[in-house]
Image (tube, rainbow, N blue to C red; front, side, top):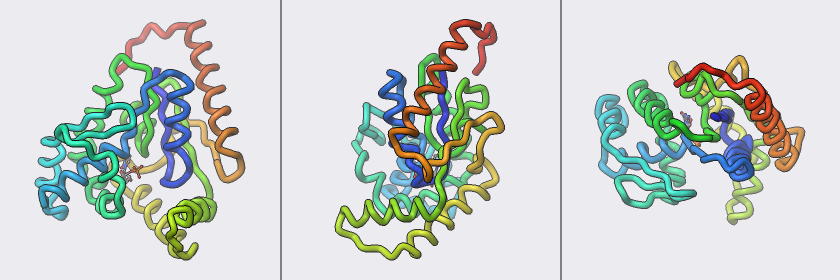
Length: 228
Ligand code: C5P
């Protein structure tokens, strides 16, 4: 079974997706990490981010591998390197590249082939897995996401004004939503969950309940169609 979880940055979807996969015994697919690995590889090999062909080549050449929570690029562990501010910032050039997107979507489908997967990103329910049995769109008000981000940064000893974080979030949402391919939007059959109004535990319980209901429905009426 494929479960997709899409939504904007900072809505709590990564944590929810990871925990949901653990509760269900499904594999967790962090597609944002794949875009980050390509970004990291471009920075590492000094690829010109303004050159779409060079970026697409770099994407096709880098070997991306997951091992539990650990991420590898060409056999080199990059779990932490891909989370730097630099990578986050530069990833927009990668995420906007049509060829990179189609290559990564292909990889995502291959990784999920024949498996039970919770796949998290921006376009998982719309582009990568349009036939997924269970689709979620997890969101939260921009202000709430900015407050959470400020709290996280404070815990790391960094004080950043709320307005600055709010502006960054709004800008990033706009870029994600305006993309020509793989734009951030809920699939027509996705269930939207707004985490501004419910707790992380409640979110997780709700996700798990819905997936288990779908699993039961599916076991009662198996779909004879084999879909990609
Ligand atoms: O979710 P995360 O912040 O790790 O995503 C890293 C980058 O990859 C962001 O720029 C995001 O917009 C992009 N992304 C994407 N499509 C996905 C997952 C992430 O364009 N399926």
